[in-house]
Length: 300
Image (cartoon, rainbow, N blue to C red; front, side):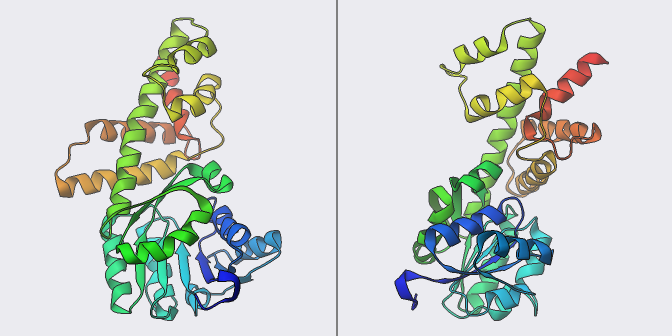
């Protein structure tokens, strides 16, 4: 890396609920030299003040200039293009041999597009969406699914590991994003199933903690059950992975399925259920709020 004590110059673009703590882990655990950029400049200033280190940049290009690694964690495909492509985008200032790692949950198409744009400039690109939510980001225990060239991944992995518990190179460019889609499809069905199970148990006047303690030791066990049953039972959803974000992710899954011919009947139905939760005012509720829809339907 050409810097003392194994330090690299790292740029971080996007300091939302995920990016803010992820960038912090790279600074604290890796000791790397960080420059941060956020569209709301006050957030970047807050990050530097909170960590007592690093610098802010006025544009993505300014942040990325001379960086060895540039990380990005923004909202969607259009947000991603806006901070990567163009005269003020990161690619305009990145040096040959550097690596762009994108942690945004986005489409496989935009991942392939950015891979090609980076490769043309002699820059490596890894699509690296994450799973684990805000808590995983804050605790540095995210699962990272990566697509891109194997040699580029090998160089990026030691820096990614600062905010991850599991990192896996899945395959070609876009494979990380496709794997994140698999993850969200699986979660959608699990959360709806758990919501229905707890709703049923409530209607049956069962002692919910006793029921969960029993069935969680068997085949019904899941991360969602262990971490979300209490929220579902209490009807408290003001935390966690927002319904708006899940709908964005499911729309990516359903759009990709139209292209590859996959059938996603459950994911499509759950997406519609989440639209009903949004109409209840639950845009920022945790995804476990599917049970609120069931309870609302029961009262009609």
